[in-house]
Image (tube, rainbow, N blue to C red; front, side, top):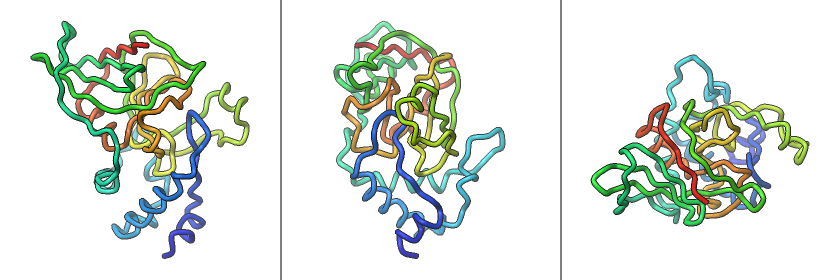
Length: 219
């Protein structure tokens, strides 16, 4: 099936949870749709990706994300020296460096590239991960809807969802560490406060951390 026909049939749209969508996403989405079709995944209803209490098998889609992203010139995660007194498992977010560090212990950390808040939406503080979701649904908050009334009131989790493959919610705030359907924004200051990661990186981080993990955001 032609990519444009797939888009029309499954009503793929481009949204960004924290800023205006960018044209580069269309090409990336087209590549992803071709991969989905090749894997025989096109035809699976979007509802199957929605966040719910029911168990769902997303392993095939996760693998697609890893393969799709393998050639992208993103900031690659790597183990780096990171002397700190913090316990292993603590997350430090450097909004100046636009990097996230997961403390591994023994003076080491896993470093990831991230997208951070744009001017006027910066924040700093310490929170804990209060909830984790795979292929999360997205409900734009009222403040965002006032700024961008054209946004949907709710979007089920899936490949066109701006929260990406995983989300880790911070305390009782509206902030999250989440994936992105716009990987080209990693390393930029574009969001309304959330920390965004490439999907393959947020999957990796999600598997390493647990609810209760301390997250320190530094300006």
